[in-house]
Image (cartoon, rainbow, N blue to C red; front, side, top):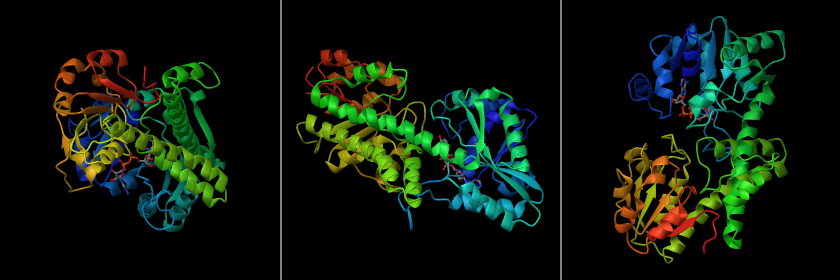
Length: 441
Ligand SMILES: NC(=O)c1ccc[n+]([C@@H]2O[C@H](COP(=O)([O-])OP(=O)(O)OC[C@H]3O[C@@H](n4cnc5c(N)ncnc54)[C@H](O)[C@@H]3O)[C@@H](O)[C@H]2O)c1
């Protein structure tokens, strides 16, 4: 929404959320989301044609176009628990919009939702509103956290789905015209509603599948003496495969991949396609296996016991350049090490101590074996091993010789993102483990 406001000064954009603390942060100098370049985009438009407030109802009443961007987490209860999307926020937003509308409105699904949610939305809107008339469009968001501003500025494509009726086509044209202010028309695709809804789930499933595919091969590389980065480079040169998203790692995280694949799995089961469901579910189970394999490697390398030992975790966000920790691999690794009775000391340049404690232990809990440090040096002092779990640039250039001198020997590095200089570390004296690397080099 900030990007639309920045690119279209004549369009009034109001972002509303009942969460007052979040809205206050959006109106402050310290935005609740860390994204490179976001401060500038928000500052360009805030107070001009971009407003943040908590009065959801008046903004919905006044809006000609309402973007529904509410959360669609994995359901934790009842039918489909652990897989299906929880649509209660979508449904309550639809009921509120229906009640408050007394003229024509375009409702845009921006949240990631299961296929055919637009039908539910339309039914709720049309059967609950006395004077409102509605067109529902699907406009999934393809930005990646960490590069969100660049992705929005220069998207690979914009997808708009709508009903193939005259009023549906008109609504699509209205939204397309907004994006066309800065996105070339040939990158704006229009489809029917269901293709658009499904495309978002399928895009995330394909992306996550590439990560699980290369991660599965990383285990084979370790067993055979092949080097996964060399394999990835060799296969990525094939133009049919391509080089992107082939980096082996401790596993994918983030709020979207796992949730959206599980949602796809649930949909396949719902539509009587258990073979398709099982195929995609393996992408998630491979990711879980990779995370537990990494924890086991730490334990094995530290002589099969970490009990009473100190292990530093460098990086807690699920990827660099974001403060988002949802489904971060670091959560599972920290929990796995605590289960083995290690002391775990975490450092992340952008994630607060509160967030780390909450993610690993649950709200309001504490454990003397889980510590949060304010620097990589503080985290690693007196530790037996250090694990790099987020590819923050600053971890590439730490003074590892100084760090080594203050660690227990043999000091071990576990490179969960394959970003460090192996030879340099081994020359210092570190024992080095990285995903998919020959162990005896
Ligand atoms: N985070 C991403 O990078 C990303 C990328 C693409 C798509 N998506 C999708 O976008 C959606 C939102 O994701 P998110 O990461 O921003 O989730 P989030 O949980 O961080 O934010 C959702 C917000 O919606 C607010 N909300 C709930 N009901 C509301 C209502 N009736 N009116 C106004 N606000 C309401 C909540 O208070 C919350 O602040 C999800 O469907 C997600 O899959 C997210």
